Length: 433
Ligand SMILES: Cc1ncc(COP(=O)(O)O)c(C=O)c1O
Image 1 (spheres, rainbow, N blue to C red):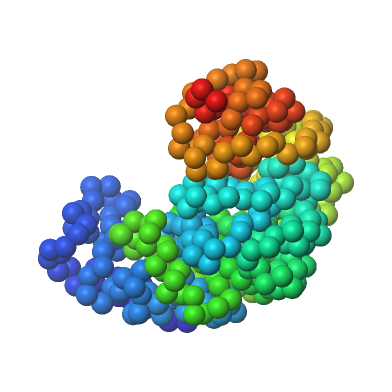
Image 2: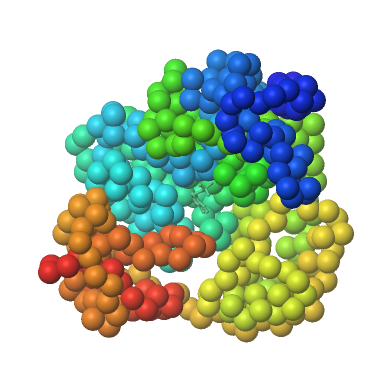
């Protein structure tokens, strides 16, 4: 592993030259704690390469990321998995593929559908709810059988609660029908480094995005877009350029190189971390019901809101909590001491039972395209008044930013009840429809 970007940025900072280029802060700021970082915040000067046309130090860095992940190719993103999802879906649009998607999707997917005017055939989970659940690959196969046109399948795995879908089975099905498999692996950047390599590309996916900032060490906004076909790199860069800033942040890019370096030098520590987590889970299982198979998601089936409050008293802040669960996001960056502390405090806390997630009602009818409804003139009304109206922009809180109703669907009483269960009080509906 070579640190091309770090060496370049360090060398440039040490030169202390006159920066007659952007950014306007000229490599310094008044806050002493940020000053060091500002020195490394540059733009596309000579030698620094250019992310969307990378052929210098950034491209070399991307190749090292692909190598450590054992994927055929990788592009860096300073716009998170969001930008990677936009790029993957743009490619599907360019190939005129029908999109078949597991309903557990992040808002980034729906926003891409608005931007690209995509229509989606939804597959619903067999167990769990919309926010997190388990899917049956046979449902995707049936959808592919019914689809005459070229298609792609899009799934989120791991989901917010750490459920892993059967990517291997889905990949086999997709191959059989000539479909592409796209995986939102935003929560699974670590999966390639577990005892068993569970990274989506290793399991047969065509494309996947990994947020290197969620379970690994990159700065917020840093992500990897992996692909099976290295010939697609230029296409992905072209698509990312459509939506991303023309000034990708070099600190984020540097953190992607640093994260890659950590994986080269310490990647095996993830397996040690996996063992620590297994031990932690075993000890907690006597007290709590745990969900999900991904090691980095410690998901407790309990009234998460109350448990989150209890943990806050010990200065522990969770990733996500609702009436059905609490999600604690672990990471290989955690120290043994932090694991021990977490265990001690969780064992000391008392949890109230989870409320049961209502069964999923029959799907709502998609009356308008996602784009048309999301961009329509709309009004925000109480849920109680929304039955029979059409969902306009989605109402979704972050985290987990997984919408329950989708733009263009006609609200039914049962789905409004489901939204109320997740404490949504209002809906944005198309005006006069
Ligand atoms: C499942 C999922 N997909 C995609 C995203 C978007 O990722 P990013 O924040 O890296 O753009 C998120 C963000 O939370 C997510 O949870």
